[in-house]
Image (tube, rainbow, N blue to C red; front, side, top):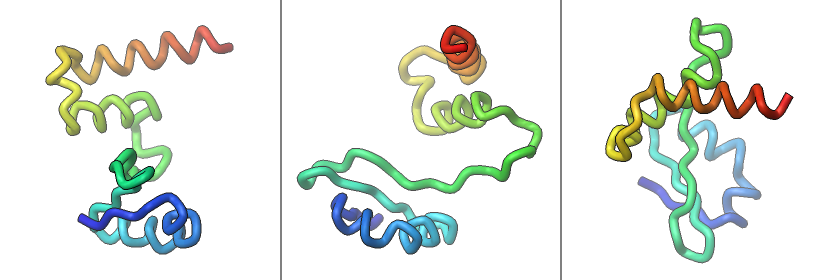
Length: 85
């Protein structure tokens, strides 16, 4: 795992995305505290909606620890998006 501060990330975003696409774990830190991770996503049109992909990401990254299934997260995202329209 490589950790980059925000200034490094800002200056090297293309390289960091390429590293993530190559399978490396890229973590961004704010004032030394890890706050975000750059991860590849599946191409658009892969049969899943953005909400479903996000829900699957949460499920793979311990959303279930909070008692929510990927379907529940996808429903909540859909409801929130509909409320914005």
